[in-house]
Amino acid sequence: MNLKTELTVIAQKAQEASRSLLSVSSAQKNRIIKSMASALMEGRDAILKANKKDIAKARAAKISNAFIDRLCLNPKRICQMADSLDEIAKLNDPVGEVIKAWRRPNGLWIHKVRCPIGVIAIIYESRPNVTSDCIGLCFKSGNSVILRGGSEALNSNIAIFRILQEAIKKRGVPENIVNIVSTSDRRAVDTLLKLNNYIDVVIPRGGEGLINRVVKTSCIPVIKHYKGICHTYVDEWADLNMAQNICYNAKVQRPGVCNAMESMLVHREVAARFLPGMAKKFKEAGVEIRGCAMTRKILKSARRATEKDYRTEYLGLVLSVKVVGDMDEAVEHINNYGSHHSDTIVTENYDNALEFLRKVDSACVYVNASTRFTDGYQFGMGAEIGISTDKLHARGPMALEELTTYKYMVFGNGQVRG
Image 1: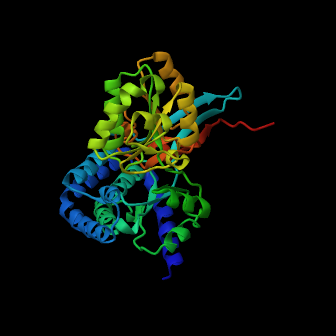
Image 2: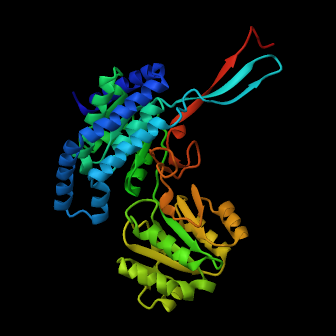
Image 3: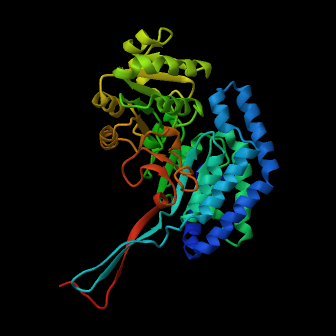
C-alpha cells in the first residue's frame, strides 16, 4: 500500500468512526476518558522507555536544551497528562448545547446547537503530551482525530497513542476514533493536507516553518497556533516588586514555550529604578538582554537590539527590552511587533489597565499577571489543542467548545414558504 492510499484509508475510517461517536453519551465518553487516564499511569514505564529513545536521539543530533525540555517526559509530567484527562472528563460536554433558541412569527422554533466538527488532523512537533491532550479533547467533543507528530518524538507519541487507543477499544468504541500517522516520511504531511473530502480542519502546532508550510499546502481549513512573541509592559504606575516577579516568571520559569515573555517594555519614568534590579535577577538566571539606546544607557552590559530582535520568538534565555515614553507607545509597539498571542500590563492605574485591555489586539491580554497562564489547563479547560492566534472560529486557548461548530435545528408544524 503506497503512502497516499494508506493515509486515505486512515482518513476514511476516521470519518466513519466520527459518525458513530454521535451515538455515544456524555456519561460513556467520561468513563472512557477516565479509563484513558488510568491507562496512562499504568503504562508509565513503557512511555518513559520510549521517551528515553527520543531524548537520546535528540541529544545525539545536538538539538537545543529548550527543545529537549519540550520533548522530555518524567513521572511528574505523565501524572499531569493523566490529570488533564481526568479534568476533561469532569467538564461539561459541549455537544448538544443550545447556544440560542427563538420562535419566528410563523411558528418555526429555531435552535442553534453545538455539534462536533467531524475529523480533525493535528500536526505537531516535539511535545509528547500533545498526543494525550488532543485525544482526550477530540474524543470528549465528539470528533475523530488524526495525529501526526514530529519524528523527534515518534517513539513517545506512538507509545502514548497505543495505550489510549487500547483503552477506547476495551469500551467497545471504534478504534479509528483516534489515529496516528506513524511514518517519519515528510511527504505524509503534504498528502494529509490534500484529503479535504474526509478531514474537516487542520491544526498545526509547532515552529513558524511548520505553520507556514501547512498554511501554504493545505486544501483543508487551518486554525493556526502561531508563534508567541509575548510582551510585558511595566507602566509608570506599576508596583515594581510585583513587576519584577511577573517579568522573571514570564521569562525564566519555562523559556522554551509559546507563552513565555520575549519582549519587555518599561515606561521611561520608572526605567532607571526598575531595570538595574531586574537585570541582576535576569543575569543570575542566564538571560541575555538586548535593548534600545535608553536601555543600554541604563544597563551597560545590554547588547543593542535590532529590528529583528523585536520580531523574534527566542524560545530561550534571550530578551528584547525597550524603554517607552507612554502607554500609547507600548500598545503601538505590541500591536506592530507582537504575534497577537499574550501580552500583559503591570500597573496600579485602573484607567490604564482598562485602556490596555481594550487596545492591545491579542488573544489573551492580562493585567498584573504573567503571560505564562495562557494555557488551556490553567484556564480551567482541562487541556488544550493549541493557542489560536487567528480571529475566526477560535482565538486563544482551544479546548472543547473550540472543537465544535453548530447547526440550526428547526421545528415546525407544517409551515411552507409563500
